Image: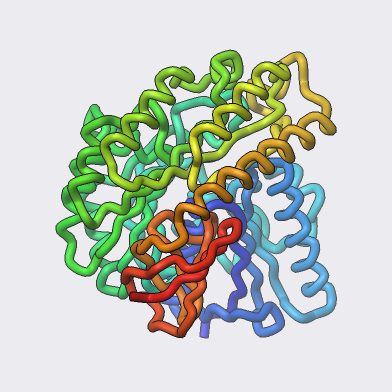
Amino acid sequence: MYMNFYLISLGCPKNLTDSEDFSAKLIATGSKMVFMPEEADTIIINTCGFLSSAIKEAKDNIKAALKLKQKGIVSRVAVTGCMVERLKEEVKKEFPNLDLIFSISAQESIEKIIKKQGEIIKPIQKTLHLPQYKMSLTLPHSAYLKVADGCDNRCAYCAIPYIRGKYRSKPIEEVMAEAKVMAKNGVKELSLIAQDTTSYGYDLYGKPQLIPLLKKLIKLKGIERLRLMYAYPHRVTKELAKLMAGEEKIIPYLDIPLQHISNNILKAMNRHATAEETKEVLAMLKDTVPGIAVRTNFIVGFPGESEKDFNELLAFVKSYGFDNMGVFEYFREQGTPAYSMKRQIPAAVKKERAEILNKAQSRVIDKINKNLIGQTLEVISDTTTLGRTYKDAPDIDGTVSFIKPVKAGQIFKAKIIKAKGYQRLVEPK
């Protein structure tokens, strides 16, 4: 046995797919994944470095792992991921007892480097390739498929381009090969992810190729549902909406992080869609895709956000009716253009605005729930007692509970009989 390793994977689904790929490689080359740190000789922490709160979480996990090492419970602690890419020198200085610090690109050679000591930093890859091995750390029947990495959008608040590099797509044939392996392993629901899925392929083929990719994926035997995550507003086209409406395998769900609706703030954020364009896209989706569920995120307290800007966002949230929504207070992130912007918003104001927006969304969900009672929706069972409607992505959205146990991994129709917040009770049909 090469080693027993315990994995801590932090951050977004895109980071999780990296964890899945390098964990599968370790297992394939003789190591064993364990699910209690006390059973491991090595703890591997795949960190997030997107926000200050994520960095704090990563550091807390490193401290806890090093305490286990100090007590002799584990022998090694290795750290990788976005925080390493962004704060390598800080991590080295703050945690000198780490056995290994390795970059995201170095993950591809994990079986060769995991027992080495010190620091292994490789430059960001210029291209993405098919992972050598695949496994799922989520559910046997539902998994994420990363079609691209990096980002060229350069939003003023975001550190991702500095961490993950330029936008790089996997070739269509390699995405298909990866999807075939996942289908063979029992995956029924694929959630396509990237920093911007709607830009998929433009770097390889000269123009976005999400639609051609989807047309190939829907023909793949074993994959019953495709879910689109991380769409960029002005790249959501009528052609994409028509494909979603016409293909049963493509779930009528779209995750579109909008971030704001005030043109003043959108411009300051360096977003490439205006308020008017955003509203046109959302209206087009509702008109074209019957029953579409839209998820979004908003940032409150961005530098220069006036009360008028915030009230415009608040009114928009109240009127549109998003099925799922995340609200984030703006955090100053070093290395981003917004860090040095004037008119930074006080922490107390940001917190208050986030609370107000969340309360408004709660009222929206109350209205949605009232209309849901008695409806029959498609549901996927994640366990024998819990699942999700088609309106809910894994991990981040709402859930349903069943009035009687069902077999996990099934897709079926169910009647909504109770609903409160993002939790619903259903009766399988």
